[in-house]
Amino acid sequence: MNQTTEWLKVDSLDLEAQGVAHNAEGKVVFIDGALPGEVVQAQIARRKNNWEQGTLSAIKKESAQRVTPGCPHFGLHAGACGGCKMQHLHPAAQVAVKQRVVEDNLWHLGKVKAETLLRPIEGPTWGYRYRARFSVRYVAKKGAVLIGFHERKSRYVADMQVCKVVPRRVSDLLLPLRGLIMAMAERDRLPQIELAMGDEVIALVLRHLNPLPPGDLALLRQFAAEHGVQWWLQPKGPDSVRLLDEGGPQLAYALPEFGIRMPFKPTDFTQVNPHINAALVGRALRLLAVRPGERVIDWFCGLGNFTLPLATQAREVLGIEGSEALVERSRENAAANGLAHKTNFVARNLFEMTPSLLAADGIADRWLVDPPREGAFALAKAVADIVQDPSLAPGWAPPRRIVYVSCNPATLARDAGLLVNLAGYRCTAASAVNMFPHTAHVESVAVFDRDAMA
Image (cartoon, rainbow, N blue to C red):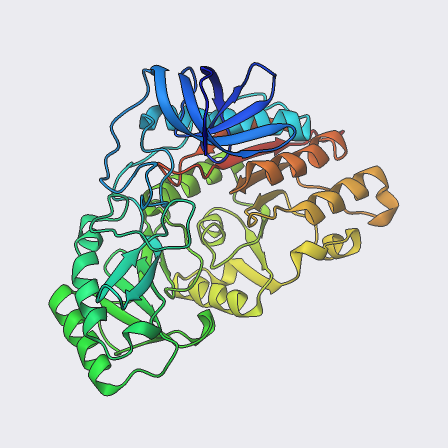
């Protein structure tokens, strides 16, 4: 690294929570640990023709939003935990930054400006994380086991004794888990422990590369009894997961506003933050404003997180997902909640959507779209293609309203550009969703309306 002597004015944060400044030559400088409004110096680690990247080394003018990190493992030093990137920024300022990211991406990438910026969805900033993937490493030279997230910008496992973003009960398990793994015969073949919490259960999924001997299984059962957790074993991929011992409460979460209970497996995709998920489902349905006689399509429906609440309001909800296994699980959840008669689920590759496939799903009054990070480009393009050339799907009409839930502001902006600039929609509202406090991850929700004559 090369220490700069130039004082740099930080203008903004990027999507990696790095401060963005410009040096005297006009070159962009990304500074890990710097905040907007600060005047800083940096140690430069990488130099390219158009940009440089480094780490904060000195502060001349400090931001009023800089705070003391809440976790002892957060920092810029070697060995610091890489799980969080923004603990040095006040939580309210973190949300403001994420709201600006959504707004900027919509405009700069999609040429779309939301008519209304809604208040961001916020929740607890500590102890919120009900899902996590902890790496496990047996360090033979030290005769010790490490369990935690990776170190900052490193493949090594951080030496974590606490974690402030998971619930206290889980944080308190980190050191006992070290002792457990250290005592197991297969300790050097156990690369990962995945956390999945429900409303009543702490589930731990142990990834093991070899079959576990009886002694190791006995240790897992003893740990479960002492600490009130549920062990699942994963010898191969996610589909190989199985419960160590049957019985006990079922892994599930509730959406009380809609009277919905959602069972899930620990390797299923569910939202990391249940507090924000409940608020997000509520807002999305209020924004969608479904009427009792209407038909709704829930694209990328997963286990039915939005589908089942929608079914309490709509005449019919069609849930579409890419996996037949997920679709079957959605059907089971709908039946368990007494909503099978108002729901239908189909499996389809949503990244290969075409106008003819879109028309085959029929006309719906409203859509809920909740894609993965890749976004819903094929879906948005199919809508735009039909609007531009109605002969591609005679008789089909686009929905009057779309609520788009996004975990990637860049792909949201790309898809918004298609919907607004080619398919006749207006982006009538948008907001950030702070699903992951203290991280640079940005989630959002946007509303698209299409006038009847558009």
